[in-house]
Figure 1: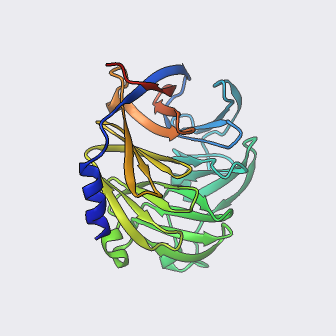
Figure 2: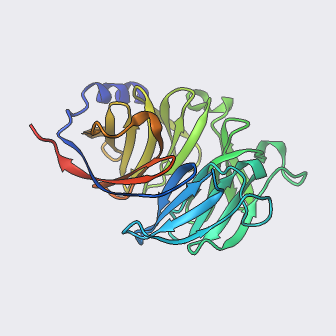
Length: 287
C-alpha cells in the first residue's frame, strides 16, 4: 500500500515554478566523483582520478587537500564516495583497498574499517565498499557492492545487521550506488539497478520505493529528499510523504556529465563534474 501511495503522489507532483542560477564554479580536478559538506559550510570533494580529498570553504577556496594513490593509511585507490555529514569526521569508501577510511576535518587519517578478515562472519564482510553514512552519531552503514546490500557496524566496528539482500523482499537492492539519511535517521539508497530510491528505517526495515524516470543522484537536507533526474530536481518532504516542488534545470547543465550532487541547504545545490564543481542557487522561474 505504501508503494502505491507514493506512486499516486508522484502522478500529481507540482509543476516547476523555480529553476537554478549559477552562483560560482571552481576546480581543476582529474576525475571528481563525490561531494559532501559539514555544518560549518565546508565542502569536501573526492577526486578518484588523483586519489585526493579536497576541503573547500564556503567561498569555494581550497583550504586543505590530502591523499595519493597507495594502500597505506591515508592513501587511496580509486575511491568512490565521501561523507562529511557528521561534521566531525570524514569517511571515504576506498573500494580497491577494501576499506572505509576515516579522517578528521583537517583531512588527517584517524582509522579504517576493513572486514575481509577471518574474524568477521561472511554475512558481515564487504570487499568493495561503494558508499557509507554515519547514523546515530557513530554507527557506520556500508554499501557492500559485491553482495548488493548494506552492512551495519555498531560504533564503527562491531557488525550488528545487514539489509537490502533477498531477505528484504521488495527492499532488495540490485545495484546500490549511494546511501544518505535525513534528520530523522530515515535511510535512502539510490538503487541504479531498479532506477529507484529505496527507503529504510535505521533498523534496516524496508518502507517504500520512489521511482522516477532517469534518476541521476540524490541528496538530503533536514527532512527534504532531493532527487536529481533528467527532468529536474524533485523535492520530497519525508514528513508529509509528498512531493512538494520540482526545480527545472537550466540548459547549461549537462546532465550526461554529472558525477556528483549535493544539497547544501534548501536553496543551494552543488553539481559536480569530472573537472569542476558548480554551485547553484534557487531562483524564481521566469514566465
